[in-house]
Image (cartoon, each protein chain N blue to C red):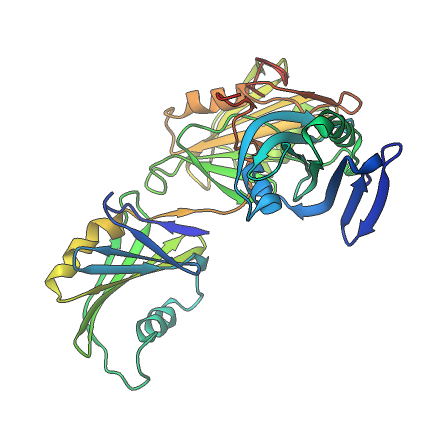
Length: 145
Length: 279
């Protein structure tokens, strides 16, 4: 299951394994596949903020906002300053599934440009839903035949 | 699962794989008995990658057992004759035939063989709860849950409507008992409006509309039957009529599951309400 973001058309999407990365102006956005919504969401937030930081790194939370996507999915956006890095972590809940987008920025003000992108998020569920999904190639002869 | 070995072909067996060699080495068909259920393009990619390939044409298959499938002619870069990829779709797996003629002259013989293998293949699943064909509500997205599909409108979750498509179930004759079972003891607070319905493919049944107390929402439930199956889906909204036309169109598009003994390969442009072979 994946998290979809509406990115500007000129933005190139890079894939690293099952993670995506996009550079939008000064911002770098990174996100992975959806996973089960953690039972302990506070711990989920705290653990995620510490990922890829030194164990003793100091994290200053400068903003903690509850927001919604354009269609109403809940988001919690936590903005942090850590050793000169400005970051926003967007935590999404899609039914019983969760997703995270990490936004890196050169300064706090530029993080605001990420907000419309984060609000565009939506889930894409994996798996066959309907028989019609199975015939996903044109039925009959191709135009060139 | 079973595959009938064509006369004169040699059979080799591996783990969940049967390989059939044509007389005089004219071709080879590799049958993978159980692969993960996936859309046809993914199945073809899994069979043929890393080769470069293009689907030339695809026909829908209905096996003699009444299972759905497909057969695709695929041009593979560097190969002298088109590959044929045949698939029979089970509920959570697929049986896949990858047929490779040695040369262009052998292609008709290999194609005839793989078509016969597809038609006669046996998944042995019988009459059971299973997915059936209907046209997806345009723009809506579905959450899979086993054989159940829960469709949401583009504005979900702010727009909290849902259209739930249940799998076809072995036939239940009494419509009132059927309604009681489907609503499962929920507390209904309005008069149940009931109307007879018939889909474009001739399936007949009933549509019930009512509100359920606990959820404060309006539910419209449709159930149509053709032995041995009942096909049911429901729409739940916040009390308005906005999606009634979407629901009506989805119900009307239900295509009954094919009965056993009527296997066929054809090229319909639609599996929709006019029946399997509507052009």
